[in-house]
Length: 591
Image (cartoon, one colour):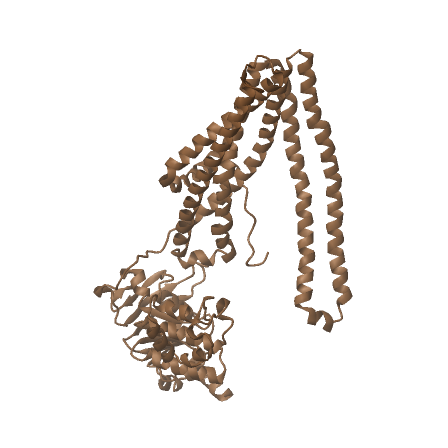
């Protein structure tokens, strides 16, 4: 299974504990309960009206004791028309009410799940796939939509038809009722399970067709390689194998469909014939027998429908439990704010005191081991060292994406967890190596640093980031669509958009994570110039592999295997026989 694929919706067994969890969803229905209750009333009335149809049809066929109401119309006919009109009217209003309540409820549920999910800590997202989480909001909630609008109503309607129908039949003839219940429902249940068995073959055919389509997609996307390796006939054979397999499964399924059709004719219709035969043998009146047979069909169809309803309810319970698992996850302590309180404004001083850290997913692997250092306001401090040394982890701790296992991080002498999380993060900005841009316009991406910024502020930020020049060259300027993840921009352009975003945020502490490592010389010059402007007057933490970019840093911290092994300026460190000097010699000599 690919990383972005999601597993099919799981069918959970219907247990009391599962039903209790599912009933939690009715908390979201509570504001619309009057409409929902009225819809249930309409459902009850329309279902009861449906129970009257077989009885009235029997009376209509009988024709006896039906006093003429109007010329050519008898009482049964008029009542039938009235019942049908009432059933149609109540069904219309029931559907409208259920759909209205469902749409409002699921909109609230979607908003609740998304709002909760986006406030969850990073640990949660490291353990989940993006496709799976998207599925929770789309597929799972869509399934609940079907449950509220259709499945629940079908379950109630069919239970009313079964209970009411059997009751009327028992009053009509208890002997024939037991005879019918011993034959017809059994046949209907067998037909349902037989139909499920056949659908498995249809699913297998679809899977094989999907595999054959994958062959087509891969070969057309990689047609150059197919031709370069002269593998046309290999791909033809591969496609032939897939399609032949789909045909074999389809033919096997066809044989079972033939058996199923024969079973319907012999089994279910045979059971109906047996009921009619038994009724005639008991000298039952024609009208009563017709009503009885119609009730039998109602009950048989309802029993068969319950199997489908049960399957849908199982899926609904699975979807509900998935959603509740998300809603039961503890969120970060976030709170909206209009402006940062004066006591929570940071000046830019940072201290790590004996910080030890291991990722929650790998608690036995220590990433930082009793790390301590100080950064003073407006300093430019660089973090260097081999991959895996703990540089990016320090950034995560600064942003409080994670909290230390032991030790503490301080801002201006205050523990980081004593500052409200939202207000703390609003004073930090990061320009990463792998810039993520949203698929909208350049203006939307820059304004992400300060939602609601004016056009003048956006242009000024773009100018400071050396981005305004290339933005002007686009026909749509700031309204240029950047494409998914910014694919329509070059690496240097994406970096400068990210810098403009950080400029607009106007952070007190700036974090640069290898912001120029993947750029060509000209792009690097423009980006580095923009970064130099951005770092002026701010505390800056720079992660760098290119040591040439951090020669002027006020302090360089060298990390290796989770510990600080050297600390000082560039000039001080190159005078020592240490890791920094070795890295410096390797880079500058190679250049």
